[in-house]
Image 1 (cartoon, rainbow, N blue to C red):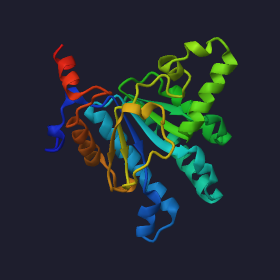
Image 2 (image 1 turned 135 degrees about the horizontal axis):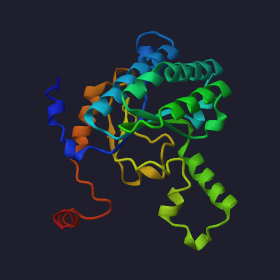
Image 3 (image 1 turned 30 degrees about the vertical axis):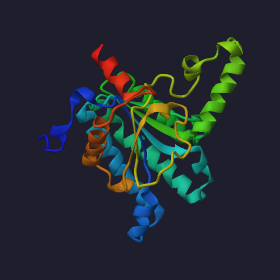
Image 4 (image 1 turned 60 degrees about the vertical axis):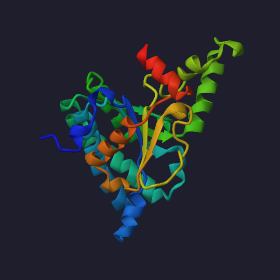
Length: 250
Protein backbone atom coordinates (compact mmCIF):
# COMPACT_ATOMS: atom_id res chain seq x y z
CA UNK A 1 0.00 0.00 0.00
CA UNK A 2 1.34 3.41 -0.98
CA UNK A 3 2.27 5.58 2.03
CA UNK A 4 1.36 9.22 2.49
CA UNK A 5 4.90 10.36 1.70
CA UNK A 6 5.10 8.33 -1.50
CA UNK A 7 1.76 9.73 -2.67
CA UNK A 8 3.41 13.17 -2.85
CA UNK A 9 5.93 12.03 -5.46
CA UNK A 10 5.30 13.37 -8.97
CA UNK A 11 5.84 10.30 -11.13
CA UNK A 12 6.15 12.59 -14.19
CA UNK A 13 9.17 14.35 -12.70
CA UNK A 14 11.30 11.49 -11.41
CA UNK A 15 15.09 11.70 -11.64
CA UNK A 16 15.97 9.21 -14.37
CA UNK A 17 19.36 8.50 -12.81
CA UNK A 18 20.08 8.67 -9.08
CA UNK A 19 23.62 8.19 -7.79
CA UNK A 20 24.41 7.57 -4.13
CA UNK A 21 27.57 7.99 -2.07
CA UNK A 22 26.86 5.45 0.66
CA UNK A 23 28.65 6.94 3.66
CA UNK A 24 28.48 6.30 7.39
CA UNK A 25 28.88 2.53 7.82
CA UNK A 26 31.88 2.95 10.10
CA UNK A 27 30.23 5.65 12.23
CA UNK A 28 27.09 3.55 12.56
CA UNK A 29 29.17 0.65 13.86
CA UNK A 30 31.18 2.86 16.22
CA UNK A 31 28.01 4.26 17.79
CA UNK A 32 26.97 0.70 18.59
CA UNK A 33 30.44 -0.34 19.77
CA UNK A 34 30.75 -2.75 16.88
CA UNK A 35 33.54 -3.37 14.38
CA UNK A 36 33.49 -1.56 11.04
CA UNK A 37 32.62 -4.78 9.22
CA UNK A 38 29.31 -4.88 11.10
CA UNK A 39 28.52 -1.45 9.68
CA UNK A 40 29.23 -2.61 6.13
CA UNK A 41 27.11 -5.72 6.67
CA UNK A 42 24.22 -3.61 7.93
CA UNK A 43 24.68 -1.29 4.97
CA UNK A 44 23.83 -4.18 2.64
CA UNK A 45 20.29 -4.11 4.04
CA UNK A 46 20.05 -0.50 2.90
CA UNK A 47 21.26 -1.47 -0.58
CA UNK A 48 18.44 -4.02 -0.87
CA UNK A 49 15.82 -1.60 0.47
CA UNK A 50 16.86 1.33 -1.71
CA UNK A 51 17.16 -0.66 -4.93
CA UNK A 52 13.73 -2.20 -4.29
CA UNK A 53 12.29 1.21 -3.42
CA UNK A 54 13.75 2.87 -6.50
CA UNK A 55 12.23 0.21 -8.71
CA UNK A 56 8.82 0.58 -7.05
CA UNK A 57 8.93 4.34 -7.58
CA UNK A 58 9.75 3.98 -11.25
CA UNK A 59 13.35 5.21 -11.23
CA UNK A 60 15.18 3.84 -14.28
CA UNK A 61 18.83 4.05 -13.18
CA UNK A 62 20.52 3.94 -9.78
CA UNK A 63 24.28 3.95 -9.24
CA UNK A 64 25.89 3.10 -5.90
CA UNK A 65 29.43 4.17 -5.01
CA UNK A 66 30.32 0.80 -3.52
CA UNK A 67 34.13 0.75 -3.43
CA UNK A 68 36.45 3.57 -4.42
CA UNK A 69 39.89 3.38 -6.00
CA UNK A 70 41.21 4.80 -2.74
CA UNK A 71 39.49 2.16 -0.58
CA UNK A 72 42.23 -0.33 -1.49
CA UNK A 73 44.39 1.59 1.01
CA UNK A 74 42.18 0.55 3.92
CA UNK A 75 43.31 -2.26 6.28
CA UNK A 76 43.49 -5.58 4.44
CA UNK A 77 41.02 -7.23 6.80
CA UNK A 78 38.41 -4.60 5.95
CA UNK A 79 39.09 -4.76 2.20
CA UNK A 80 38.85 -8.56 2.25
CA UNK A 81 35.57 -8.38 4.18
CA UNK A 82 34.13 -5.86 1.70
CA UNK A 83 35.04 -8.11 -1.21
CA UNK A 84 33.37 -11.08 0.51
CA UNK A 85 30.26 -9.00 1.18
CA UNK A 86 30.16 -7.97 -2.47
CA UNK A 87 30.49 -11.56 -3.64
CA UNK A 88 27.84 -12.70 -1.15
CA UNK A 89 25.45 -9.99 -2.38
CA UNK A 90 25.94 -10.95 -6.02
CA UNK A 91 25.44 -14.67 -5.39
CA UNK A 92 22.40 -14.24 -3.17
CA UNK A 93 20.66 -11.40 -4.99
CA UNK A 94 21.11 -12.57 -8.58
CA UNK A 95 17.77 -14.41 -8.79
CA UNK A 96 15.94 -11.56 -7.03
CA UNK A 97 17.36 -9.04 -9.49
CA UNK A 98 16.03 -11.11 -12.38
CA UNK A 99 12.62 -11.58 -10.72
CA UNK A 100 12.34 -7.81 -10.30
CA UNK A 101 13.52 -6.91 -13.81
CA UNK A 102 16.74 -5.31 -12.57
CA UNK A 103 19.87 -5.48 -14.71
CA UNK A 104 23.27 -5.22 -13.06
CA UNK A 105 26.02 -3.00 -14.42
CA UNK A 106 29.44 -2.09 -13.04
CA UNK A 107 31.89 0.75 -13.64
CA UNK A 108 35.45 1.35 -12.52
CA UNK A 109 38.78 -0.40 -12.82
CA UNK A 110 37.06 -3.75 -12.54
CA UNK A 111 40.21 -5.65 -13.51
CA UNK A 112 41.61 -4.71 -10.08
CA UNK A 113 38.97 -6.78 -8.27
CA UNK A 114 39.94 -10.23 -6.92
CA UNK A 115 39.48 -12.84 -9.64
CA UNK A 116 36.71 -14.75 -7.86
CA UNK A 117 34.74 -11.52 -7.26
CA UNK A 118 35.24 -10.36 -10.83
CA UNK A 119 34.00 -13.70 -12.18
CA UNK A 120 30.81 -13.61 -10.07
CA UNK A 121 30.26 -9.98 -11.03
CA UNK A 122 30.53 -10.59 -14.77
CA UNK A 123 28.35 -13.69 -14.48
CA UNK A 124 25.63 -11.70 -12.69
CA UNK A 125 25.84 -8.91 -15.26
CA UNK A 126 25.40 -11.47 -18.01
CA UNK A 127 22.49 -13.22 -16.28
CA UNK A 128 20.57 -9.97 -15.80
CA UNK A 129 21.34 -8.28 -19.12
CA UNK A 130 17.85 -8.83 -20.53
CA UNK A 131 16.14 -7.17 -17.54
CA UNK A 132 14.88 -3.70 -18.42
CA UNK A 133 12.88 -2.17 -15.57
CA UNK A 134 15.83 -0.67 -13.67
CA UNK A 135 19.60 -0.65 -14.15
CA UNK A 136 21.63 -0.99 -10.97
CA UNK A 137 25.21 0.15 -11.47
CA UNK A 138 27.90 -0.58 -8.89
CA UNK A 139 30.92 1.72 -8.91
CA UNK A 140 33.78 -0.59 -7.93
CA UNK A 141 37.46 0.29 -7.70
CA UNK A 142 36.13 3.56 -9.06
CA UNK A 143 37.62 7.05 -9.00
CA UNK A 144 36.50 10.10 -10.94
CA UNK A 145 40.04 11.26 -11.68
CA UNK A 146 41.06 7.74 -12.64
CA UNK A 147 38.09 7.54 -15.00
CA UNK A 148 39.07 10.76 -16.79
CA UNK A 149 42.68 9.60 -17.10
CA UNK A 150 41.57 6.21 -18.46
CA UNK A 151 39.32 8.00 -20.95
CA UNK A 152 42.21 10.13 -22.20
CA UNK A 153 44.42 7.06 -22.52
CA UNK A 154 41.77 5.32 -24.62
CA UNK A 155 41.43 8.32 -26.94
CA UNK A 156 45.21 8.37 -27.43
CA UNK A 157 45.45 4.61 -27.95
CA UNK A 158 42.71 4.61 -30.59
CA UNK A 159 44.26 7.61 -32.33
CA UNK A 160 41.26 8.30 -34.52
CA UNK A 161 40.18 11.65 -33.04
CA UNK A 162 42.14 14.80 -33.78
CA UNK A 163 42.72 17.02 -30.70
CA UNK A 164 40.66 19.84 -32.21
CA UNK A 165 37.71 17.44 -32.67
CA UNK A 166 37.48 16.40 -29.04
CA UNK A 167 34.40 17.86 -27.37
CA UNK A 168 32.19 17.21 -24.36
CA UNK A 169 29.96 14.77 -26.22
CA UNK A 170 32.55 12.50 -27.77
CA UNK A 171 34.80 12.60 -24.70
CA UNK A 172 31.90 11.23 -22.64
CA UNK A 173 31.85 8.19 -24.92
CA UNK A 174 35.26 7.16 -23.55
CA UNK A 175 34.19 7.21 -19.89
CA UNK A 176 33.03 4.18 -17.88
CA UNK A 177 29.51 5.66 -17.90
CA UNK A 178 29.17 5.95 -21.68
CA UNK A 179 25.99 3.82 -21.67
CA UNK A 180 24.34 5.69 -18.79
CA UNK A 181 22.40 8.98 -18.73
CA UNK A 182 24.05 11.77 -16.77
CA UNK A 183 22.92 11.78 -13.12
CA UNK A 184 19.94 13.93 -12.20
CA UNK A 185 20.29 13.53 -8.44
CA UNK A 186 23.24 12.78 -6.17
CA UNK A 187 22.47 11.61 -2.64
CA UNK A 188 25.19 11.57 -0.01
CA UNK A 189 24.49 10.07 3.39
CA UNK A 190 26.11 10.85 6.78
CA UNK A 191 26.17 14.62 6.28
CA UNK A 192 29.60 14.94 4.68
CA UNK A 193 29.82 17.76 2.12
CA UNK A 194 32.23 16.42 -0.47
CA UNK A 195 32.23 14.40 -3.69
CA UNK A 196 34.99 11.98 -2.68
CA UNK A 197 36.33 11.62 -6.23
CA UNK A 198 32.97 10.42 -7.54
CA UNK A 199 31.76 11.14 -11.09
CA UNK A 200 33.68 14.41 -11.35
CA UNK A 201 32.81 14.79 -15.04
CA UNK A 202 29.20 13.60 -14.91
CA UNK A 203 28.02 15.65 -11.92
CA UNK A 204 28.42 19.03 -13.66
CA UNK A 205 24.68 19.85 -13.45
CA UNK A 206 23.46 17.20 -11.03
CA UNK A 207 21.26 18.25 -8.11
CA UNK A 208 22.93 17.38 -4.79
CA UNK A 209 21.08 16.20 -1.70
CA UNK A 210 22.96 15.59 1.56
CA UNK A 211 21.34 13.89 4.54
CA UNK A 212 22.79 13.31 8.01
CA UNK A 213 21.23 9.83 8.00
CA UNK A 214 23.96 7.19 8.14
CA UNK A 215 23.84 4.71 5.27
CA UNK A 216 22.86 1.66 7.40
CA UNK A 217 19.75 3.59 8.50
CA UNK A 218 18.81 4.76 4.98
CA UNK A 219 15.60 3.26 3.64
CA UNK A 220 12.91 3.87 1.02
CA UNK A 221 11.34 6.77 2.95
CA UNK A 222 14.69 8.58 2.96
CA UNK A 223 14.96 8.03 -0.80
CA UNK A 224 11.48 9.50 -1.23
CA UNK A 225 12.44 12.59 0.82
CA UNK A 226 15.45 13.12 -1.46
CA UNK A 227 13.26 12.82 -4.57
CA UNK A 228 10.67 15.23 -3.15
CA UNK A 229 13.45 17.73 -2.45
CA UNK A 230 14.69 17.29 -6.02
CA UNK A 231 11.21 17.91 -7.41
CA UNK A 232 11.04 21.31 -5.70
CA UNK A 233 14.11 22.54 -7.56
CA UNK A 234 14.40 24.42 -10.83
CA UNK A 235 17.10 22.88 -13.00
CA UNK A 236 18.72 25.62 -15.07
CA UNK A 237 21.78 24.03 -16.71
CA UNK A 238 23.48 27.45 -16.81
CA UNK A 239 20.39 29.36 -17.96
CA UNK A 240 18.49 32.05 -16.05
CA UNK A 241 15.16 31.29 -14.45
CA UNK A 242 13.41 33.36 -17.11
CA UNK A 243 15.10 31.41 -19.91
CA UNK A 244 14.05 28.10 -18.35
CA UNK A 245 10.43 29.21 -18.11
CA UNK A 246 10.47 30.43 -21.70
CA UNK A 247 12.00 27.16 -22.88
CA UNK A 248 9.38 25.12 -21.01
CA UNK A 249 6.56 27.12 -22.59
CA UNK A 250 8.00 26.52 -26.05
